Length: 347
Image (tube, rainbow, N blue to C red):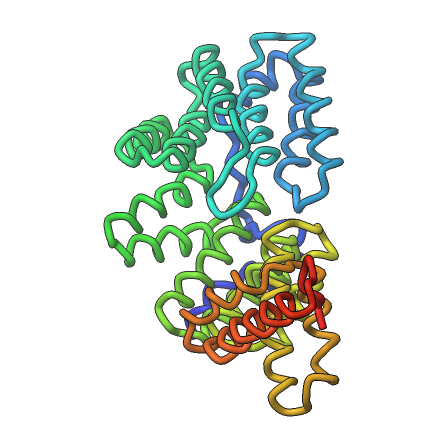
C-alpha cells in the first residue's frame, strides 16, 4: 500500500522519536543561521537548545520557561541576534494558543513584532519568511501568506514548514491534490524536525478522515501517536474515534491518555463527551445503576451536559445519546422545581 512505501525508508533506518531523516540525507540548515553560528558559536549553541525545547514541546510548560530563559540570555549579550527573535515568535505562539483556532490576547501581535524584528536585522532570513507566512495564515491573510512563503522559497528555504504552511491556502482554494502533496513531501523528505513530521502525519490522518477513508485515517492517526505521543495528537485521535466513529470505549481510552499527558480544556471536554456516550449506551443495556459511574466521570470533566446533548443531537453516531442527555435535562428540571434544588445533582 501507499503508506508502506512512504514510511519504508524512515522506519527501517532510524528511530522515529529521534529523526525521520532518509539515509545519507542532510537536514536543512538556514544559511542565515549558519552565518550567525560562524559569528558566535556559543550563542548559536544556546539558540539550538532553545529551538530543541520548542520543537519538542508537548504540553509541559517547563520546557517553554527554559526556552525563554535561553533566548533572554542570547539577546542580553547580542540584541541584534536575529534568529533569537524568530524563536521568540514561536515561543509566543506556543504559550498563547488556547485551542480551536483561538489565541490569548496579544499573542499574534507579539509574535508578528518578533518576526519583523528578525527580518529587519537579517533581511535575507529565509526561514523568518516561512514563519511570517504561518502568521498570516493564522490571521486569515492568505494572499499575504502566499507572498511570504513564495519569498522564502525564492530565497532557498527548505524548511518543512514552508510546505506545511501552504496547506491552509490550498484547503481554502479546494486544491486537495496539493494538500496531500505537501504532507507527502514532508513525510518522504529529509527532515529531522520532529514537530513538522508529526504535523504532517496528523495532517494525513485528517485528510483521509475528511475523505471518509476511515481505515487509512486510523493508520495515520496511530502512526502519528507512535511517533510523537503528545497530548494534542492523542486527544485528536480520541476526538476522531468519538465524533466520526461513535466508539466510546476507545475514545475514553485515548482521551484519558491525552489528559494524563496534559490536563487541557479541549481534552477534558472531548473525554467528557465520550463518557456521556458511554453512559447512554450502558443505561440502555444494563440500566441506570451500572451507567452511573460514567455519568459522574463525565460530569466531573464537563458538567454542562445540556450543551453536550445539543451537539450530540446533530451527529448521526451520537443522536440517541444526545436525546438521552436532553431528556435528562427536563427530568432534572422538573425535580428542581418540585424539590427546590439550587443545582442538579449528577444522580
